[in-house]
Amino acid sequence: MGDQDMSQPDGRMEVMMTIAAPSQSNEANTSSPTMGEDSMQKLGNKTNGQSSSIPMGECGHLDHHSLVEEAGKVHTLQKVSILPLVFLIYHEVSGGAFGAEECVQAAGPLLTIIGFLVFPFIWSIPEALITAEMGTMFPENGGYVVWVSSALGPYWGFQLGWMKWLSGVIDSALYPVLFLDYLKSVIPALGGGLPRTFAALGLTGALTYMNYRGLNIVGLFAVFLGVFSILPFIVMGLVATPRLRPKRWLVVDLHNVDWNLYLNTLFWNLNYWDSISTLAGEVDNPSKSLPKALFYAAILIILSYLYPLLIGTGAIPLDRKLWTDGYFSDIAKIIGGVWLTWWMQGAAAASNMGMFIAKMSSYSYQLLGMAELGMLPKFFSMRSRYGTPLIGIMFSASGVLLLSWLSFQEIIAAENILYCFGMLLEFLAFMRLRIKCPMAPRPYKIPLGTIGSILIIIPPTLVIFVELAFASLKIMIISFVAVIIGLILRPCLKYLEKKRWLRFSIITDIPDLRATENENAVESLID
Image (cartoon, rainbow, N blue to C red; front, side, top):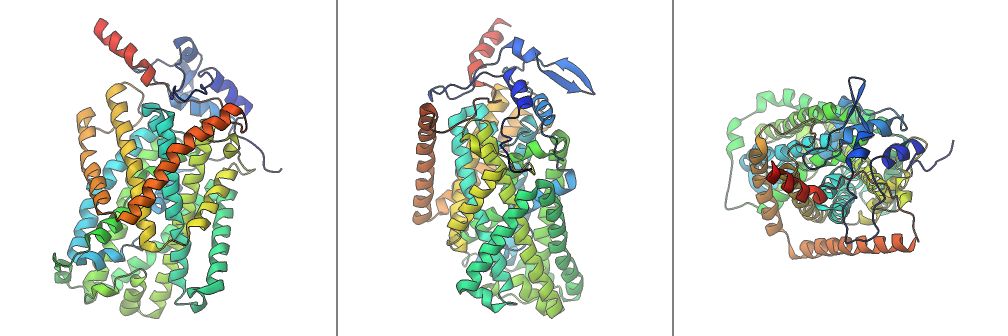
């Protein structure tokens, strides 16, 4: 059976038609049509095998879980279970301690250890909590694009999708380069020239094909790669125990800190928690699996940084100049010998492979979700015979190849700025949904109340502004140009849709929250 367009199966179309009207082509109306009570009563909420009517929430919110269940009757491919989900998150966020070396070079052992202890509570945990709440509230492909569209309108949902996709593609362009950097000490020919170019193309093609073959294959391979990349650090720690000198962890020189490199490296190593939301529609029982997977992944990721950094900085004398990409392989040689070095280099290569396939899956499904919501041309929602987003994968792979010429630090800085812009929109959407729609169904809800949930956004927001303040002029200009392209691209796509030069999906399951705000205000006054 060949590749086919599975973007709008008939069964899904029938379900969607009972709850939504076609979207307006006029961009001035940036949200979806309001859904009436009669339409809502037609859709049953599957609870313990029984069908019951879905009540409108305080904001007229649609119960998305029933929609996903009904649509799932058509899409019968195997869903992703919790263990592969944990390792997909692990690779999307971290992939292990590889890449954290430059933090020690920038700030020394003490600030690095403090950074990887404190920064998760300032940034990672708030982002993971928001992802758990919003991801279970909207368990669909597209993830954060749907959240922002529901709260702020499709125009801003598109802007977020553009910035996050571009940031992710820039990030993915880094991993084939790092993969070859770790292997060039074993295969010197990979250090440059045509052999390196062909190796990068071949690696990108092979990993792209794996994404094409199916998300379950990617998930199982992510588990294997994750375990393989963690094991040499465990062995190195056991061998290095007699060498440890705890006083080496306390070395700090505040007059010799590259704050820009330090913050960029921390931020790059501990973000992208929300990426898993873009493929929530492919997850088995996302309402329960997603929060659990995020919790388990958070523990795994924090330990996967702290343990190697404590071993590396505590077991050998400090020379900050040596702490560059790949230095863990040198530490492994000092501590365990050549055999451990080879294992560490293989683990580093495996880690980069895992991050590449996980991120490509995430951003490919994001494009598919945006196409299903009518934000991108309909051909982006085409699925392969394996159920994977065919055009999304090809588009993301092409972006990776086009951006692979950037240097390591330029890649980190550029993606961080775009990611920051996107996160500001996510935080704003989260606050708006919490305040305007407190009664909307949330299978997982941050247990801090509305005020507490909003307060946890303050530290990561401050981190964003600090990150922006340290950005170079060159990176800021590049980032603003990218943002401007997105601002222009949306009206251009709407024009193409109006002229019918490209086909767009006209069915959307984005609830119209803004249109019901006045109704809620009137009802509260009457009550």
